[in-house]
Structures are given as C-alpha cells and as structure tokens.
Length: 247
Length: 247
DNA sequence: CGCCATTTTGAGTAACTTCAAACTATGTGG
DNA sequence: CCACATAGTTTGAAGTTACTCAAAATGGCG
Image (cartoon, rainbow over all chains, first blue to last red; front, side, top):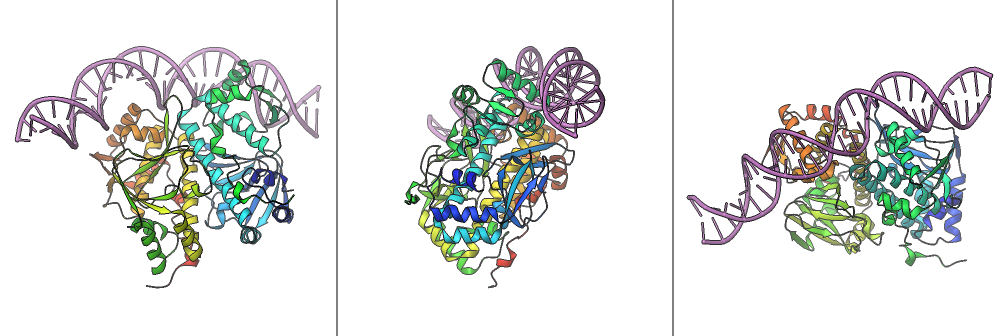
C-alpha cells in the first residue's frame, strides 16, 4: 500500500522493517477511491486527516475569482497531500484528482505517533516536506524565467524523474493522465499554446505522446533544452547517516 | 534583536517570557553585517548555521546558465533564511542581501535545543515554515496567472502586509529597497515593463514611490486590482490553543 | 454508431520583450 | 560644496511570444 511512499523516502535514508511496517499500517487504516477530477479538499476547509496518494494523480490548485486557475503541484503516487495542515487552520488551496485515484486517509495522531516513535521516519518526512518546498521554488523559476518550450519540457522531465523514483516508469515511458488544458494550468500557458509547444517537442523527437502515455526517447536531450537540473529534488541520499542496518 | 521574529511568531501564538528570551539569546550569539547585494550563501554550498534576518532585506534566487535570474522570495526582517537546510545537504538556491543588512547566525544545535525545550516554539517555527511554503505557492499563482499589473500590485501588497506584521510600516508607508530590475526578477517581468507597470499604478493613484519609500494610500483598492487574498499568510492566530498565559 | 471531451488548425491581436539612448538621482572625492 | 561617476529610472520604437476566438478534426467509450 505505502510502497511508493517508502520507495520515495528511501531516496533520503534506508528505512528499517519497523519503519516500513508503521507506514504500511498507517496507509491501510482507511482508503478512499476517487473518480477523475474529484476534489479531495477545498480551499477554506479544515483538514482532519492527512491524505496519501496511493494510486493515480492529483494536483494542488488555486483559482482567481474570474476563473483563472493555477496548478501549483502535481501529486503523484507516494505523495502526501496535506502534511502541513495540522498546524494551519484552513486550507489556502484546493486539492483534486487528475485521474481515478486511491487515497489513504491517515489520522493526525497516527502520523504524530510515527514521528515520535522513529527519529529516522520523522526526518524522512521532514526531508519530504523540504523537497516539496524546493519543487515549489523550481516551479516559480519555471513560470518566471523559462519560455514555453523550456517550461513544458521542464515539467515533463520532473514528472518522469519523480515517477521513476517510485518505480512507476517503464523504460523511457510513463503515464501522463493530465490533459493539455491541465498542463496549461500548471505551466501558466493557454491550452492552445501547450498544444503547439508539444508539437514542437514532438517534431524535435524529444517527446512521444500516445494516449495517456508519455515517452521520452532521450531524457538527457530533453533536460538540456529544459535547462533542467535535478538538484532541487535532493535525491542524493542525504540522510545516509540515519540508515537502518537491518536486511 | 529577535524582536521582528517574535512579533511575527506571535501572529500564530502568544509566546512566554522564556520563549522570547530563548529567541533573543539565540539571535545575539553571533551577528554579521552585510553590504547591499552580498551573497549570504550560494547554491551548492552546505549551510552550517541558520541565518535570521535582523535588519534589511534579502532574497532567495536562482539563475539559469544564460544568466536569467528569478527571485523566489523576499526575506524581510524576522525571516529565517535556511531552516530547512539542516536536513538537506546542499543549497538548491542562493540567498543574498538586497540592502545593507544584519543577519544573526544561529548554530544548528541552538535551534534544536529550542525546539526540544518548547513545544510552543517548535510549533511556531513550523507554522513559520508552512507560511513560507504557502507564500511560495502564491508566487506560483502570481507568475502563472496574473498579468503584469496584478502581479506587481500583488507583490507590493504582500510586502507591505508582511512588514506591517513585524511593525515595520509607518502609516501607509514602508521601505522598498529593491530596484525595478529586482522587482522584475521577482515578478518574471523585464525591467522596462516593471517601470511601465509602476507608472500605471501611480497614474491610478494606487502607489506612491519616493526614493526607497513605498506609500499605498488605499491598500484595499490595491488589493482589489491585485486580486489579493491574505489567507495564504495565515495571520489568523491559528495556534491560540498554545498561547502562553504569562504577562 | 454517435456523443462528448480533447486535440488541432488558422487568423488576428494583445501583452510583454528587446535594444538603445536619454534622463535623474545618489553618493564620492577634490 | 561642486563636479563627476555610477546606478537606477524613464522613453521610444520595433519585434516576439503567447493569447483569444472560433471552428474543424480526432479519439475514446458506451
């Protein structure tokens, strides 16, 4: 159940059997199946539990009064949706699914227990939160200083690499359930321009899109034109001094 | 010394005398004076201490190989520069001053002690980190879906309100040491366009700029055209159940 | 097969950028 | 206290990028 989360956290530090079991247990208490494009929680609401994406894609988004929408993050399997929120009283953004999805609802106390019981897991979860923050900064860079081609390419690189980290790629392919309109909401571009940009990427042989499958024949080349530097994902096993030693 | 940080944290919860003293002590161990536009720490480096802005402005920024620069956050008095970094091994962005500034360098262990000693401070610091994250999301919205006029207006609203929270406004005025080029790097606009946008805001009577002083005669009106909603700053005293009761 | 969502195309337009030069503060040394 | 240097702001004109609107094509699915 919590496989993807565990795989992700293990990019920071090796977890013990106990650590993993604690996560598995937390993730299996209560599950919710969602259809495509269903809100998980809305701006202004008070979150009661922490949602973990088990399966499928989601996103954080905000809208302006006149309907303009910005997606601030993609939530992939293994991602926690609202860690922060047990300190803040109100959501300042909404979260919804982008595909059929399964979410584990983890009660606050369970998370707090885990944090108390294992310093290693506590730091791993903290690492996770910091990487999310760094990702948000990178999106700021993406929107502020990259042009359309670089921007879309960058997003595709990020998604592919994050999925690869949790074992959800198949060679040079992965799923991409988001529509072009949604890619536009994430990159600050219009649907039409996303379409033209993707055509450009395809014409250059950097990207293949077939149905909901994305193929990146030459990731290095795509990273090049995106000016993509993976350092912000902090996949360097920085918590190795905490590594569990058991088998 | 730590006055601004204390004022800011008190928007989350009331602190006890001990809490405040602990912060004061931490902030007075070691101070560094910086000139204008000096780097505090650079991408790729490993931070050893946590920097607290005591005085003056700073910013987080990233640059692309070809020199394009994006400012991801403004650091105002009372802001902590690199909390996260005692888990991550490398900085994924740089931090520099935008004006002459004073920074307190707080050793890691001092922060960890504070966190251990006071659950209230611990949660207050967490709140602070979450607000920064929310602010980063709002900047994503700003860059992705607001036009130049809204974007600049939004930035000015945010800066003014954050400064007001720490007591650094004087009526409807505050300092604004950033140049138009820097405002451009923060809003993803060219210097020239920032200039024209500011002229527009001035012509509408929404903004007065004199030297390094910003005056906002009618904040509500500026918020209106910026589509500014302060909810993301979470100034609602959400940690009131933790309030200290001493005088 | 037919419906609805999504992608694609074209044409015209608006927003913002670039470049280059002029102007205006601010601060420094004589 | 003035003269000069420099950083920052402002202006104009031309060029680009991305947007809007509207319609046509495609694709997935019951």
